[in-house]
Image 1: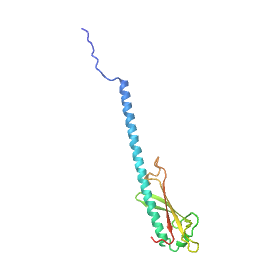
Image 2: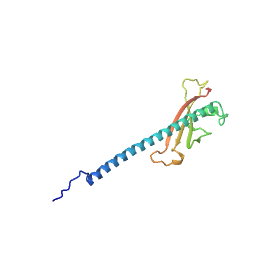
Image 3: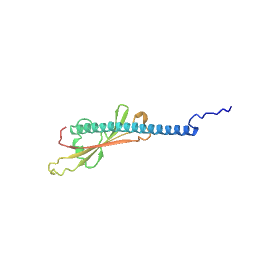
Image 4: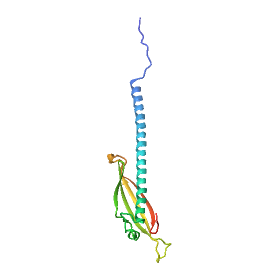
Length: 163
């Protein structure tokens, strides 16, 4: 009697290798998408923090200049007489730390001509600009793909305003 071997349906080795490769490729694509989403979310969070620092520092410095608070005591008329864009000193360039993040702030001032005033009683107007730079978490200063992040903000202030 002859034994006939029954062929059991199965996948060939080539089919198995191709299917495992396809699944691995799909998983790598999904992991890459999640990594990009996390990186983008972190960058947006960092930018929001930098924008808040710019807003609060600019408001604080304008208030201090207009009300002659330290370190601007006695400098109000000099600051409002500025005609070209200059780094406001003090404080000039300074660091602000919030949590683990350190922000580098550069505060500039520039006089602006106000055509609505007469030369006899000038209403001096100044534009304050702040530039805030940071590079991500202090522990991860060299993160790939993040680089140096920057935001800037401008406001006008009148010499006769009271805030």
